[in-house]
Image 1 (cartoon, helix red, strand yellow):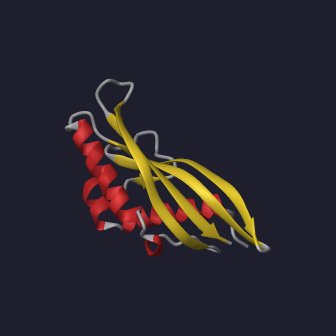
Image 2 (cartoon, one colour):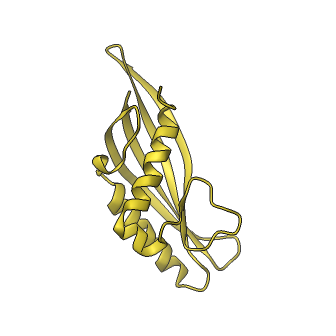
Length: 138
């Protein structure tokens, strides 16, 4: 039995981002659901995942809004690095449904919705938050 839309999508996103050469060139394999306490920057982690049920013609599906965070290192050109990582995430995922395996479901649509890049509370690092929407049939 499938784990549910959110967990299946989460697993597929982490695997797809780790496998993407453009993303790996910037963060290596540092793509996490939950980053370790002593994480090396730059890295990527998943943000919020919000599935919303859709029911049509007796079928079940979900519209899932989610975010991915890119965290830059303070000693680098932080905003530039965070923005480059965000661009690599968008290139890896936007309308790339076949790149993301969602076990037990079919990923119908995967679209980039927007992003923001801002200085972190430490005053040195930057983070990008990239928003997506996915339609998953299940």
